[in-house]
Image (cartoon, rainbow, N blue to C red):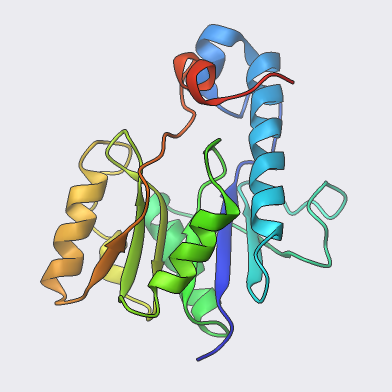
Length: 198
């Protein structure tokens, strides 16, 4: 088995373009500051995982001068298409050199290095691993072999994402493990509950 890999999708942290649902109540500047904090948390959490390649996919442009160290992250641009297409294409690319592969979001304030380590370890016994989000989606998904169908015909950004994904995994006859359920930071109340002062 090749070296494990973690994919991170991020939006380039630009004013007025990040965390728009959060910005609706806290304003663009506060939303951007919160998103930068979430990026910092995600970066520090992923950097704690040893013996794992790290791939960072930007939404708009590759930034070689940001806080994500070039020596530790393979920096790439997200493919075009809807979320499922972009994730599927990124997985396909990373699977060419690494196995197993998982992807994590960049807006989960409760993500820990222990959860990431458990995800990689769980893939020794399961075909898939999923980190459920409280809104019915997931903050993490990983797999041992590339299975593109789990990203196809999914009602993205709805509470159906997790159940539809699990249905497809079961249709494939594959096994999966579930991690701790966490909350994404999409709205002001999410940050008030799960975030921190800075």
